[in-house]
Length: 626
Ligand code: WTA
Image 1 (cartoon, rainbow, N blue to C red):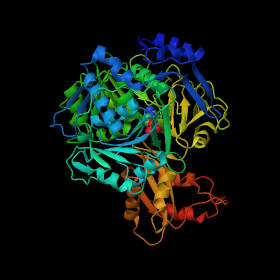
Image 2: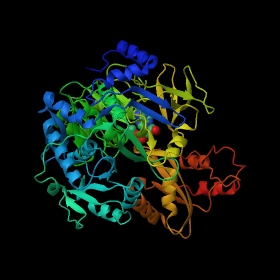
Image 3: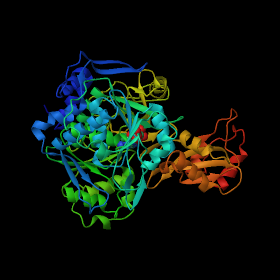
């Protein structure tokens, strides 16, 4: 059965049907999968708990739908096309049959090393096919994977290992990133000094960087699979069993573990992939994200493979060996759908058109954008120079918590408009509300973006702390899922995402909680207090601006080092300003509104500062702006 919508009228009809009878709509899509046992009931939900369950009592294994199901029809077709960091190294094509064998074999190897149903496994790996094999092997044996982006520091990794009490870590000796070789295993070693739950570490050899292997704990990947069977009977999972945990930053405290479950995530990633990208049989699809982020989970691994697609995985960076690398790889592999982030587009735009000149890019049919609002200028540059003016550009809005794309054009089917994510996918019911939670209907309105009805891949909880999930997403407005984003509905009825309305900054498409960065800065022994805000940045979308009260002078570099150690280089502030004080209300709360304006250079209009406890500090900070 094909669930691809193929015309505008079909889109409108499908949308209407999906709202009239959501259960029937999703059931029809779920029916196209292989279930060991069908569900008793499609949906049970209550946003107060929250308590959302899809395909209740259904039994399945997601990897049977990715691997076993495709063996008969597309065993020899390429599942994963891997382009290495160095363009001169041989690329790899892994067929569905080979992927099946690799996953089964690694599943057996993990089991032999003590991993079973329900155990948590951390994946801290470079962009090699084995990272996808690792995820799928976990899913096959019922273990819960939690991929941690390999740019996070040992401390950040240890926090995540400890939070989910992981029993195993899958990693590599090192990681090639552009001209650099990054040590990976040594970061894991350091993290494991701070955690006690991990029993085994399996190390994939990628860079031949020398590493220390701890006796009884560390095993080489190639030794772990040596002589191991290529067959493995998949574990029977309940639809609502955990598939994975993915940590993401919020506006308070430490990152939280967003939980996705087997059945609903399977149905939604498949459906959204097929429709947004309008994938045709035989197409080569490339998403440039890292598997450490949700985009890599849903649209490099699960969605495309569930749809039987050829998904390309890229190990390197857009500027290595030069700023034409993306375009070189598109031509080399005749890529048909290309999905990247606005920050990459803006960074490449800064190199001008020359790096594009040697390439035809004539295989491209669809181009996409994700992770942050794409500004009009970047939209046009991408559309004209990469899409040659004739590829639909899908601006896809979604979140780690939503599991899949929620608001986006369907390529070539629904109209696009620069900088607008446009319309919700059938099955998705977003609304815009005012501060009090009143729905703003009609056009030319703006407010906070919520969703009023569940969809199959909505987060189920935050790992180990359900109350935090309720507080963060379901308490702002009664009976609504609150996204944390602001949005506008324009005169044509199109949605435009305006960015975060909470204390989360979006740096190069990566979510960073201001509180998390502040906590890291405050760890520096000379720091007394700090306040972090976002400000507009030409390439990154938003930059990090830190106002820091410290003893002594010239500690900016040390502060950057502390942040790199505690979180990772992605959290390093672009600007640090040492200040004598921070603007505070009489109750002692930092007035971030004022700091945001100063950081953005909007100093002429700071609003009313007379209610501050220390209004004089504002002038001081203004005059010292970095
Ligand atoms: C932002 C990434 C505007 C938004 C898939 C959201 C976007 C956060 C878009 C989620 C877009 C993502 N237009 N903003 N097309 N896509 N965002 O969890 O603020 O890493 O809340 O998921 O990124 O980031 P996350």
